[in-house]
Length: 451
Image (cartoon, rainbow, N blue to C red; front, side):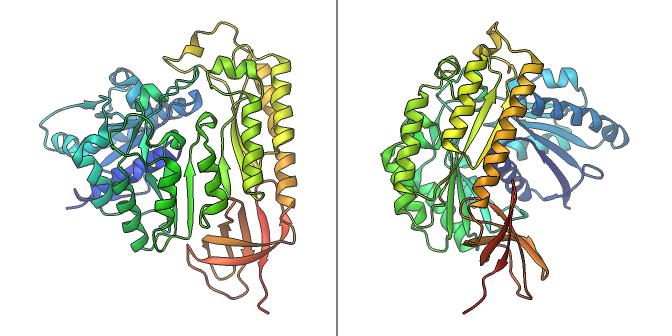
């Protein structure tokens, strides 16, 4: 008999992929995904603790689920991901109705843990040990052999190539919630992508906290293959039309990797390269291990190799000790690089990080003003960048739509809306579109007229 499973995912693409893996694992146990917690047999909240706001949303949702649990005592509620890893048993102290707490490297144990709960063998389950889970044979193969989970974009999938981080930026919880870096074996990655391509997947995004250091540390995979070589192996798999990756650390960006943007046809020329600040003083306090100058040198090299590359970044404003001059240096960096887009945030203290103990915190009103100023400038630049596409013909991979209009993305990750002109497209199809309108966050166009 099937059971209804509702998963609410907070955070990044790594968490999205983890939720897919959870669906794959539990599908083998008869769990069917549902769109609502109402009427579900199991509710799992896959959490992110990178920023305080995301963590607050988790506990707010858990509070709402208390009433659902009261009306359905058989409902099992679980917390997975970084908040589960970070808070552990403290979650149950705040939310006694939670039945299950599963850390980032223990999700492969979910089937057995849920079985014990449903069979009343145990009343509560918690697993938050950090270990090199890619070294565990069952987990290696579960990523590959489990049936694919249903997703809204079946033509596009994430593939995890490594996990953890060794950088210990002073503001970041990842080393504590995801563990140390460990690279997944090349053969397993290639096998998974081959299977996905054979199932009709057209676009693959390779995932890791710092993909640039793939194969360099914690060599459980016993491989000499670096990330640039891995990209070339994956790109050679038949059936793929687009290849992407995220996330990268600037200090580990090598020239061989930069050359991939010029030499691999299906590698999309869109690169998310988090800089975090335009001030060397702030970067040093963040423990980022590069300078603004070295970052700009790499931007210059990237654009020499691939002039059409679109660069995006992450920015933290209001880091402890950030002066007005430091913030102006960040605005100067934005004007210099002219990023196509940014994920920008106000600094917030995170548990067990060094910066949480820094004393020179920035007042909230100053952080808010700086964030607004940064985002206003980024919006202006994003509009200018998108306007550069006016009149150009671009390749759009269709995501959704009907016979009237469709939505898709260009290789540089711009969202495009276009009229169908009576033609029919399925998700994953490629369309040639001429751009005739540009906004801050998307483009509009028309199908290319056939000669």
